[in-house]
Image (cartoon, rainbow, N blue to C red; front, side, top):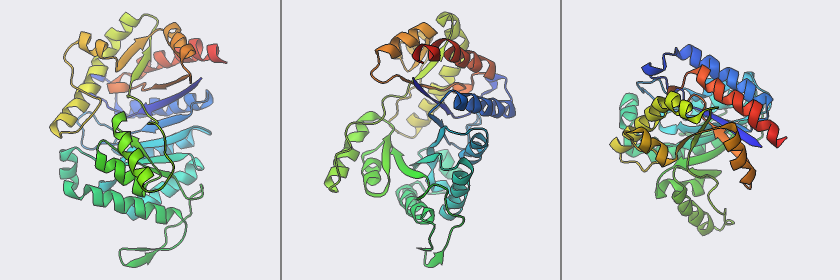
Length: 323
């Protein structure tokens, strides 16, 4: 059975956890997951969030890479308009060398107006800045000198992985999907239905049909010996995540799988957040054509001790059933 982790490091006041302790717990979880064969660890990026959402994914992945040997890492997503492309290339090449080529990158355009105001970046420049960033990173990752804004530059050292990290594009619009087909190594849609625009554009460009969407709806699974107790413990953090994302996306008119919710019954019925016993997860995965689960252990500010309880149940009572 394969599994993955993701982190965004929301740390609202209700969690009662210092950010330093939350970071330390995630590093321990990364090391634990690597030893158990975790395939991917993803981190996300936002800025000036009241709950401390991770603003700097590159140093976080550098710390995780230093604690692990095999797991691959994914930035999902890096908000390109807020970076100087050359400096970003240098930082990513250093990360690529620290991790020995275990990093992949989803590049996003961003959507939260307050973040663009913070960086004094006009939102109507998003597409241009994403395209410029992808072009610059690809040139820098070649290890060769290249023309950049009217001058010749050479980003050193060279990546550990030939060609550097893969550069996927993320997005929730038709324009983002078609742009990805033209300039990136692939596309990760925020919503599965957006994939069809990417698929259409790829074929219009004369390339093979990439097939159906590689991603489904984003769901959070946690484990508990008693799911009712688990819901009572974790629901406040699930509410925090979906309502925080829902507010961002409603304010910025962005299509999203997240929506603000007001009651536990609605939260549970939606199915985006689930609390299962280990036996329930085993039964589900035994029926799946491809057993795989992604955990978001610190979701919405879940305290580290509660997150570890869920992960240890997975280690003790789920993984052995698939060995």
